[in-house]
Figure 1 (cartoon, one colour):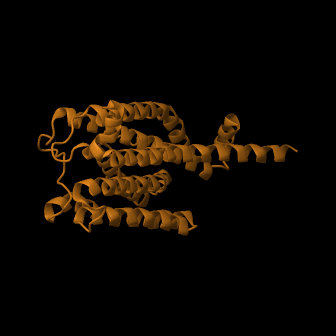
Figure 2 (cartoon, rainbow over the protein chains, first blue to last red):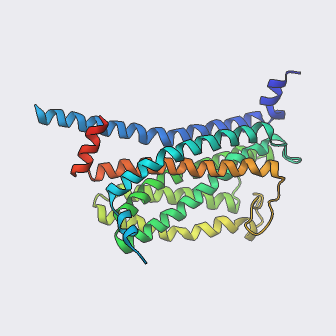
Figure 3 (spheres, helix red, strand yellow):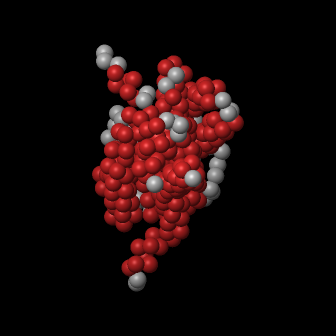
Amino acid sequence: MNSLSDMLGMGGHGIYVWSSYAITLFVLALNVVQPWLARRRLVNEEARRRRREVM
Amino acid sequence: MNWSFFHKLGSPKWFYDISGRWLPWFAVAGVALLVVGSIWGLFFAPQDYQQGNSFRIIYIHVPAAFVAQSCYMMLAVAGVVSLVWRMKLADVALKCAAPIGAWMTFVALLTGAIWGKPTWGTYWVWDARLTSMLILLFLYFGIIALGQAISNRETSAKATAVLAIVGTVNIPIIKYSVDWWNTLHQPATFKVTAKPAMPVEMWLPLLLMVLGFYALFTVSLLMRMRLEVLRREQKTRWVRETLEKLS
């Protein structure tokens, strides 16, 4: 028996367990990455505005 | 009582500085707790004698549901502070926490549905617990939509605060739904007054995951609030200087 595939298969429940964990990981990551990207966007916009003012 | 703490809390700059110092600690703790908790829960916790391996979904389902409900309570508290003391930071907290709460409710509902398939034989039933959680999701949607629909900041703060407070009626309904009605959903795994209905090697990873979810919720909330503070105070000198240093 392949022990790795046993471990990942979880006795037929693998698909349910792994899909749940994958979705959750995606949502958690999204909730951190999204504000981080928005913050970078704000910083860049402000930098561009400042350059325009100098010119 | 010394109220200077409360006044400082209302200052956006003070909040921005202090939250910047806390943020990395919450992030490190959250990631560590979630990594350890998931590996423990997925590979080392024993199987459930009735549900087999599908019960491992509990390690994300229960923490997400906890955070979804506590986040709503936080919204209501922020709503009271925002209405009574007109504290702008409370409105910022309310507006920034609502989407995270909605996401957590979504995760709780979705992982619950996936768990339901092998356990109950169906993804969805109109059971009291499931339905009251769905109402919680719609309450979050309502608060987000209301906040975006009203352009006047003061009116928007008042309206969302009132909706957040009124919606708390749903929280005890969620909590006691499994006791009041004959639900398909299993009763609470943890009670404050009783010993957990699980062996320690099953509930300890769950505790880590709950703490990890709360830590990551805090990280996301602080990041969103800091961004919102920068946006709202963009005309002030300290924000201009902060943004200049960042670029």
